[in-house]
Image (cartoon, each protein chain N blue to C red):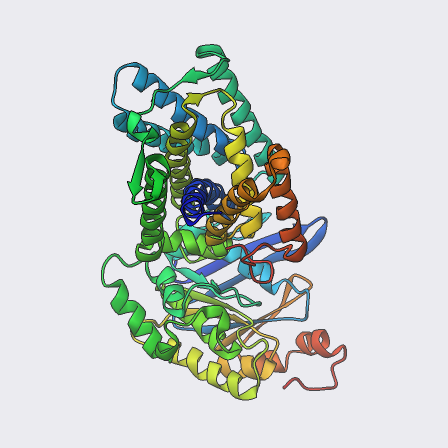
Length: 249
Length: 297
């Protein structure tokens, strides 16, 4: 059972999950407080996306609990979890491609807003530089803009915690930089500011972006700490490079 | 062919197409949200017919009976979702398919036992048999009413889907149900609404179907669901507006072949129509309006 909760944090407690005998997660615990950008890194197959799927209610864990503030959300349906305040993006972009940019954002906003939906949608479009694309079908947007739209749509649900699954995947260097400033802008935003859990393979981006980093390898936690601590952690270097006499970016 | 006959057949095709479009859209509505073909859909047409049969037999006006039939089909569809599908929500696709077959068989046999296995007449207003004349042109009243009711229903549904939050929720869920849920869209409500709309469309199509046949039978839902299924496949499985297009294409094929085929081949009109459908699907296996890279629309 969890300790007394802080306001609007998400706490993962001893989560385990296996698929057909393959242990994807083994007793993983972490806490993401609101207002903090938390990185989740690890080699391919280390269980990062599985953990996001468990937190967002897509997959039920075999054991362990997930709490959002003082609510145990472990057994709740994904739509209920979203309305309680956990939103996410996806490794492979999953916009509603045939809906317009504006409708995509509205699909997020309308689940939590009762009135002034149009105002909220317009506000998000403006903040994310999407106003000029408002009537464009999401599927025909340039890739980098689609990534931005996915974040705007997720923020439309006014989350307390935002889960970003490889937000920079497929982006070139300038688009990654652009995205970095977008994510940093969200953290400091008075209206949409929230805690974030970010997965990415781009370690440079993670090191620059995150306040704290949690490292998984083969479904187990191998390190947790500040970017500097994680960068120099022998188990992390071993997991990424296979030997310890090189440095991570 | 004279311009008068051509116009008449064009209106007939539009009229039949609007029924097929309603049926196809009703079937596609549930498929696009749940990824499941509801084979009990045809029985919603059947129950509409029997509600009308009972009410007309009880001296109720045809219009009142029709409205009651549509309401009953809508409620029946929602009830079927609650009883036969909701408890199986996490079950495999085949289980849901069998459940829908079971519902269809139960409804058909209940009607056979409780009413009669034989056809029952539903008297339709005399005005349906009349024709409107415009100079040398003449069009049947029933095809015009069918076309009007069909187009108004499709228009209202389009407005609902395009202009309301619930419509947006259904469109989003139809595109990607899992993501829609992760945005907080209430799954149970969207599914219940999809079944309600599906039942409403089956009800409206059922009224128009009964008005054309003038009789009801326990297995009368078979042909409508067959036509709906063909139309949905022509339009692109899972595509809402593709289903509407598919309905009109199928009707134009059937009426066109009926007009163009020599007399000795007319008994085989449906067979020729199905051959044409096969050719369409050979050229466009994904249907006339394709979905993008595996997504359902």
